[in-house]
Image (cartoon, rainbow, N blue to C red; front, side):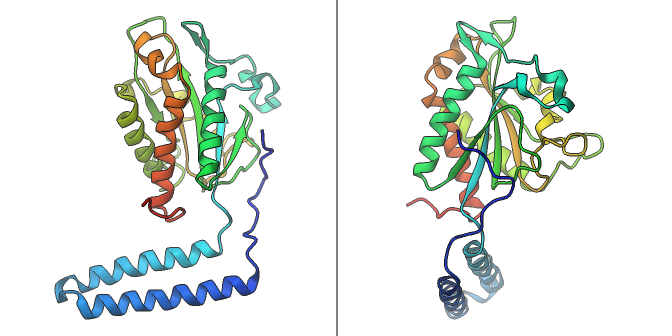
Length: 268
């Protein structure tokens, strides 16, 4: 498990190479704008120029940003080692159902997600239940699975931080991350939407609650908690029992979000 840095490392590109890339990107941006001006119908000229400029400047900014890095928290892992401010959670070791412990599933999914995303060029920090104070990354994903005394309850749900003090959430990118994850997970899993059972503990998840705790994700890092399905439901377990399945669905959501943010190139 990689030790996560408190702050992200700067891009290792030499200064001269950065300047050369910047010059090439600016030249490409001007060329795109000229092409749009010469070839686009007049009513759409402003919109097309805006699109070219937005894409071009995002590319310029990415030259100076650090490598793509995400944090993946293994829900309940090493909960007994929580700091004093989270002492009440030391006994919260996760659920169990149909012979599967939640922590074991969360870890298996996280490890597969790490391997596949790093093959896509994304650095992945696997994190335990305690988050490094002010952890920063392109996104943060907390993995969990449900269990219920009602064996018929099933489905997937997710949440980003929302509270009375912050009804708008922590930052504007969290709803975008949630949407990308949800769309991919529903598509690839076939699980129903369990949004009606999103709890207050999810909406005010401790690892996102920077106004109350020190050991939390930085406010500007978009963060989402997911409940991948029910360990207590046979239909959900048919999907969850092979960690490759939920890991693949989550990977597609992560990649879709990073591409939409201009942090990864569009797929071929």
